[in-house]
Image 1 (cartoon, rainbow, N blue to C red):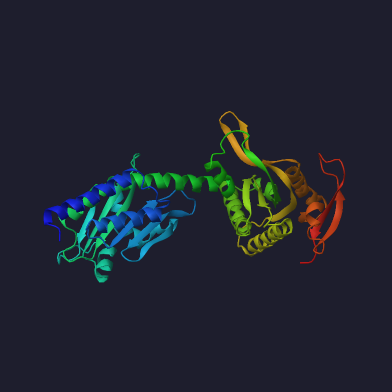
Image 2 (cartoon, rainbow, N blue to C red; image 1 turned 90 degrees about the horizontal axis):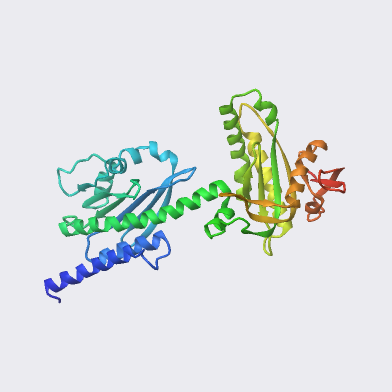
Length: 394
């Protein structure tokens, strides 16, 4: 057995090594779960009495408030995405997190102490689970934004003064690691929200210069809300925006659920693609686009809106350039080419033929037993008349 002084020096060396590892970016850990596992495991090896760790970080996401990571000794790390509505529930308001964030100060509750305040829900919950001590710390970013981590111990007596000093020392590099992780996560969320999932991934991978991109094959879907222009002249702007958002809420999820990507919203419509390759054939993706349209229409039909709008759609399969275009410092990551133009023209042709959902002859050829021609039209910019098709049956 090592003498107490030598053992203390070894434990201190382990803490120093942990801090150095965190400051160096926690390499080669590749994700947040591995980093949290690494921090907690190294603290245990340094004889710090932790049995539970929570990390609460707020995100820039249209539907989520943030993300929670929860580590328990012997059980690993669990990750949960928290919806925006959580801000208004007692789970958030009656616990230490908002107070730690507002004051940027730590909160400790020594759970074994009979005089420990019962001021938070978590206090009684942890006591019932056999924990003896609880510490919530602010993680303060360089711009002043504050996130929270919590530590809990089940050791009799709770945290020692040494434990608390080490956890306070860990807090700084943990804030920097968390901030770096969140910058990447928020960038991913924002790019996916505003330019699309695959487009955002390409931008993060470095395709940020004008002309960067590639030629791809995909099924192209254009959707246009019917009756919107007339309605826009008779209702307020706020009501119109709500109606658009509600309508897109019915139509967009089914597109994404079936592997499509919304490239652009265009006022009262949107433009989506379903990429094709050796595994995702044109017939598979055309079927996916048709199914997405049908499910979206069913959702829109069943919705209880004050104003109901119809939908026209056009589906085509083709090849186009997928990448950056623009001027100066303003770029757009989008798809351009004759096949994109043809699909857009087909939406107008649907109105002319009194058929709300149409396919190009190219797309229909992949599903010959399911499609039937509905007429021939002249499309602006395309010399020969185009035969327009629809899916037969219901």
